Image (cartoon, rainbow, N blue to C red; front, side):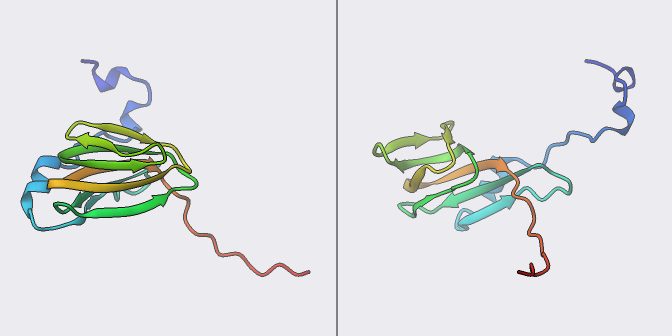
Length: 132
């Protein structure tokens, strides 16, 4: 392992750290659904969420017009609906959802938990009225 003191600028660099454990988070309250965890670190360039869909629950078809999304199934199984038809997913499935793609999610008998990661959206900007 490289000693951080040997890397130029390492003393002032941000520090990597473990944020949690998906198994612990999903096991904490098996009845909870929706977003169980969100990345909220200041200065981040990414957004990430841990989502749980209850057994046989679903998320309706939708599209993300601007951002590619990476989806990693961490527990359970289900079906990802897409324009080319249903695609089974299970723990360990890693799915790329290109921007503009339409998708839906349906959980299997034991539910489905997954992490999504995408570029962070810029904050809203308030602008003055333009004068015509």
